[in-house]
Image: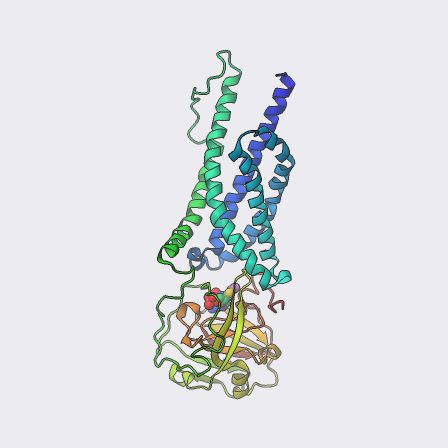
Amino acid sequence: MSNGHEKEEDGFGKRLTSLHLWNAMLVGLLAFTGLLSFGSFWREVLGEARAWIKWLHIIVGLASIVPLISYLKLVARHWRHLKGRFWKRFNVIFIPLLLMSWLFSGVLLWQYNIVGPAVTNIALLVHDLLTWIGLPFLIYHSLTRLGRFQELQRYRSTKGREDGIHLTEFKTQPFYTRKAFIRSVIGAGVTISVGPALIKWIGNLWTGQALQSQNKVDANQLIPAPQPLADSAPPIGGGASDSFRSYSVTPLPIFNNENWSFTIDGLVEEPVTWNWEQFVALKRSVQVSDFHCVTGWSVYKNTWEGIPLKELLEKSRVKVQARVVKLYSGDGVYTDSLTLEQAEMDDIIIAVLHDGKPIPNDLGGPVRLIIPQMYAYKSVKWLNRIELIEENHIGYWGERGYEHDAWVKS
Ligand SMILES: Nc1nc2c(c(=O)[nH]1)N[C@H]1C(S)=C(S)[C@@H](COP(=O)(O)O)O[C@H]1N2
Ligand SMILES: [Mo]
């Protein structure tokens, strides 16, 4: 073997090693930010920070194109190197394919506004599936690879010596090299973020439950229970197609007859506050609609029963100066608003029942808003106050980078 050739081979090996390291770091960061922001366990703990972690996830995801493309330039050569080694060649195809599908489905989810719910529903399924298959696979892959890198290092450190190549010779290294430190940080990060979600996921598989929290008992205690209309039980929509992922930016509030009330005030001729007994006595109607979250999931054919927002506004006689309908959540944090014109859409409903049953507290019960033509972040959970105001009000997610007018692409 000529000296020049050897050098070239060494350079190739070094480039592969550094690409692997960069890629491992980015995937580690993606796993960390992805599972922190989208995993249900950390959602309630993180609250506010989740919005920023999500942006970090998107930026790192886009950055991961760089090592991917750099590797694709080397892939033919890598393939030739691995002649006769089936599983290594399998990795050469499988891992870039995995990373590209992850990236592509991620871009679709990021651009939900352009592609619409039908596409993001599939993209989310793919993205999740890749996570649960790909992540354990990549963790396994990098652990086996780590051994290889160490071997390579030992090989290099002994190569120049006269007594030749002794792969069995262990060169003692300082306990915390820079690489080892980075590795531990990544390892700890992945464990913290993946751990709870993975355990929960396995637990759910075990008990045969969906990822969502539908079969839990309702923590709210409001008496009397609202009696469903004939259209609700059985639901005219035939029953919702999927389950909700319970979202909250605060710990879940719990309500009973003492701490619950509903108010409409501000620029109205007749401000009113109802207690629960009065509120369940109000006339309700039933509608069927789809529910779309910007993170990619939807629940189709929901049968909601409640008070149309339009009727409530008419009853309280909105003053002429009023322009905006401000919506408050009983969690004390979440708000949003609609223009008066938007608020007069016929299908907006202040919902009390879903598919004929009281809305449980984790899904925003006893009373939540439903705005079928907009993304679900406008559908304020634990709705307990409507205020008519003159100036616009930007809501919780509007303040954090989402469109204030959240029309669903149809
Ligand atoms: N008070 C309150 N309302 C909220 C939210 C929230 O965190 N707090 N999340 C919104 C978002 S982003 C979605 S997708 C839906 C989720 O409803 P669900 O938890 O019943 O699935 O509620 C919306 N309303
Ligand atoms: Mo959402």
